[in-house]
Amino acid sequence: MKTIILIPPSEGKAEGGHNEPLKAVSGITADLIEAIKEADPKKLYGLKEKALEKAITVNKEILSSRTMPAMERYTGVVYDAIEYKTLKNKSDFDQKVLIVSGLFGLVRPTDLIPNYRLKIDKLKAAKLWLNSNSEQLKDKFIIDLLPQAHKKTVKYDNGIEVEFVLKKAGKKMPAGHQGKHIKGRFVRWLIENNITDQKHFSDFTEEGYKWTGDVFLKEI
Image 1: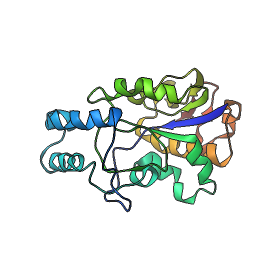
Image 2: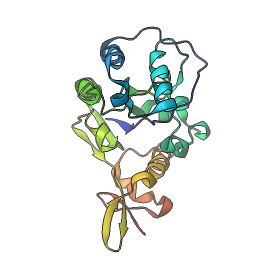
Image 3: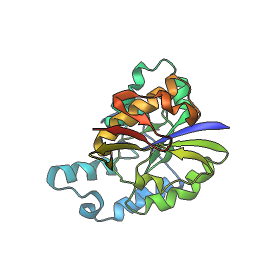
Image 4: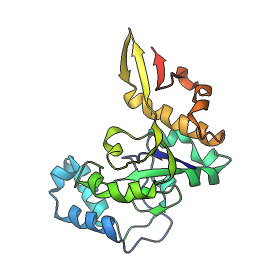
């Protein structure tokens, strides 16, 4: 059974691109682009002034702006921690990792995408993608590193949700923003060590996290 690692996109994205524009899209992506045009920008983006203007412009140019591979486009903490450029076995990463995008569904690391702005909880994107995404994950073993909002876009029969948890004074709490970096390191570790089974998770101990059998826990 093939192993698939699910990760979220990043809100931060590199601008520009060195590949041709998409020019045309179909299906759910096309429907969402039309919905973006009709939506109230302030409600859709939750931004003001220059940031709002920039988001509007970026989405107006989805089909005309130049593209780049997804692993170059996304620039958030998870992606910085993966350090994709220095991976020795990029082909393994490209085959196993899928990015859950609000606009494009399941995105491969090498897929060419434009700059865009759409959170997964807007325009019913999660609901729209659920059936399509889930169909693509059939007969796969899933290592799920998705935030709660993105988990609503997928269903799978075989897999494990991986959570990073902090414990302070006996109380447990989600790792939150700190968890983004360790998620990226974990993904890199999975790929570099060809890990496809949770029985090996206890070998991962970066940044003081230890696998309990249910979650990665760090006492602070």
